[in-house]
Structures are given as structure tokens and as C-alpha cells.
Image 1 (cartoon, rainbow, N blue to C red):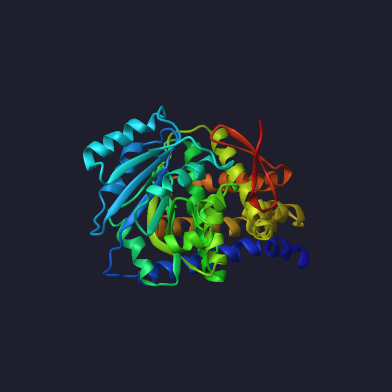
Image 2: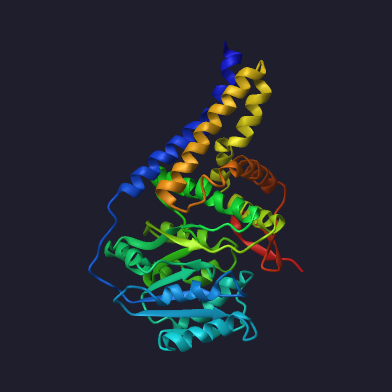
Length: 379
């Protein structure tokens, strides 16, 4: 009897985690969002390098906000020859150079060139709410109203936002996009409810100038690859609360092949391994693919193995579909539902490979990861 039940016991952690994530999501998205009559002035700092899919529309979405407060959109670039500069000048012509501006400065302050751009542009930031967003992010018209409402609580030092991708032009892109829905977002919501947020998501980070100064400014992040994680973690350790906004921002993904997507996944995995070693190691216990393999290996016969695996993936696919349709609303599932088992397999191998090396590539540069998340650029 025990041998027959063993496959079901092995898949139990993944099953329970899926259900916990569903409960956490229901609690989070059913909560009343904060509301504030105040509309503080904000500076949106956007480091850029090269073109992304839909760069103009991504940038313009920040200029089309339904927001009464003053908004400064400040781009940070290292080279005047960067092709994205022409897009920024077009924005300046359309929306006015009093609202949109760019700082072009090649000065390097450390191995993280993105943070170097932020350091170079920060002296031009006029306001006390600083928002840092990745260049491939597109936001809805009420984005600023939703994010700034959290700052009505004086204990909040940073507000971060969940992100999704609603369009997947290739299978490789769909692997990444479904990962947001079926893995990243559930993990963030479980962390929020079980321990509170101690990190930020790089798609959107709004921080008080006071909180940023308390951690030493952007200079405190320039030696790290995961500057988003470090910004949130340092603000948390400085005694501020981190709030998670329930309105999604959109990560626009272009048509990509599988190898670049997998390389990016491995970079993220290795970065998180050195940033949160204990939590990252424990996350392997909830991965469904190794549970499926182990259940098949220990089962006394094919029947209980297939029953345990069927139970695991009935729950897994149902929960992923509920996330996609009811919470994330990315329209990816059920069309890409068949991809989830493949995505789970790749997630496991990425998790395992992250322990076998400390080298990553990022925007054409190669780095060695150091304990704690610091990086050393390689020649």
C-alpha cells in the first residue's frame, strides 16, 4: 500500500503549492486597491540601450497617462549613436521637451551599465517619486494613478508592479510568456502572503527619493546584476514597506528563437540563486517536472505512476488556466496550455543548470557572478 501511495506523496508538494498560489491570488486580487486624492509629481527614469519591440508605443504609453500630477519622463542613454535616440526625439516633438528629455552620458560607475545610466541621469530628476521601468514595458492609462496611490501610506518606500505578456508571436516567446503566468506571478503572490515582499520586480519600481537616499542611491546597486531585486531588498532592510500594485504592466516580447530565451532564463536563474540562495534552493521542491519523474521512478507499476502524474497535471493546468483567464487576463491560455509541461521541463533544467556555473551574458557583455549577487565583468 505504501509503495502504491508513494507516487502521490511525491507529487503532493507541487499540488499543495499550486493550491496555495491559487488562494493567495484570490485574496490579493479581491482586495480593495488603495485610493488617494493626492497626485504627487513623479519622475519616470527609463534607462535605454537599443530598440525593443514597439519601442515608440512603449514609451508613449507613459506620456498618455490620465494623471493630474506633473510627470517628467527622463531617458538615460550612454551613446548618441544608439538607434533608440531617434525615437526619444520623436517623443520630445510630440509631447514637448518640458515633459520628455534625455541624458546622454557614457560615464561608467561599475559593471552594471544600466545602473550607470541611472546614476548619470538622476541629477536631472525633478521630483520625489522616482519610477524606474524597463524599456520594453508598456503601461495602461491609469498606471500612475494606481501606483502613486500606495504612497498615501507613509510607511511605503517602494511600489512594484506585476507584469504579463499578452502576445506570443513564436513558441519560444510563448515559453517565456506562459512562465510569467504559471510560475513567476504565483511565486510572487505566495511570497507576498507568506512573508511579505522583500524585493522588487524590474518591470516597474516606484521609490521615494527619501528611501533611495537611505540605501545610498543608485550607486549602491551598480555592482549587482539583479539591480531590481537589490533595490527592493535594500529598501526593505532600511525599514520601509514594499507594496505590490495589482494592475499589470505589459512586457512586450518580439519574435525570438529558443536559444536566446533559454539563455535569458538561465541568467535570471543564476542571478536569483546567488541573490537568494536558500529560497532558490527550496523552490526546487515545488517544481512539477522532477516530481513527475520521481513519481514514475518509484511507482511499483505504471498504473499508480500515471494516476499520480495525471492528478498533478490536471491540477497544474487547471490552476494555470485560472491564473491566465481570471487573474492575469493575458489571453494566453488555454491556447498555449499544451506548452506548460514543456515549460515545466525547461524550468527544471534551468534550475539545475544554475548550480553548475557562475557566468552569464547580458546585453553583449559577459560576467562572473559573486556570492551575494555582485558581478565581475569578463574580458
